[in-house]
Image 1 (tube, helix red, strand yellow):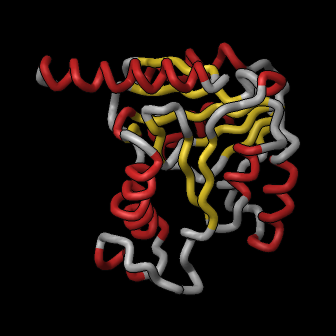
Image 2 (image 1 turned 180 degrees about the vertical axis):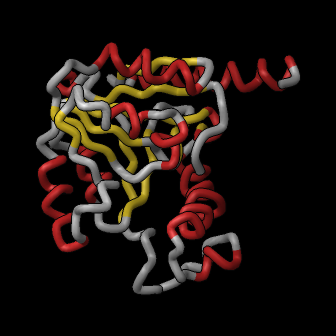
Length: 215
């Protein structure tokens, strides 16, 4: 990457980490996706019950495969042997996990996590339940503020995820939000996580990666 562009990005990351920290979230930076698992190991112990939200970033960083290695009680939402009618049961159990993994649809420079959800299981776990939450996101998820976060979801994250998941909704075809009312739409629930109460300090841990990851 060009050194001047890299400098601008580095400053954006530093501002974001500083404000996440002010908001009582434990925030840090790793340079590459290969650095993610060593950092994650600082927050896990063998035998922990762990789970995750739907995320391309977790696959790209190797987190999903790592959680399947047998050291943890992994509630695996991607296990093909789990029938669809049992998925809500798994999602409910995940709310009592020791650690829950997710990415974020956007992270503001003010130190806020912006997310959308369909069923609500992912944002529910981010808000309350699991003892620890680890959010992993590429620097491309950083935006200026909540308004920019909403725009990012509508213009980038939602259409890309719709195509990834094979959903038959307008944005999967047009590449932008059409404010649809499709039965398959997943832009149903919007959350902005900001300041964490002191009693919940560092429950949410944010690892920002110096690479573009996910959508």
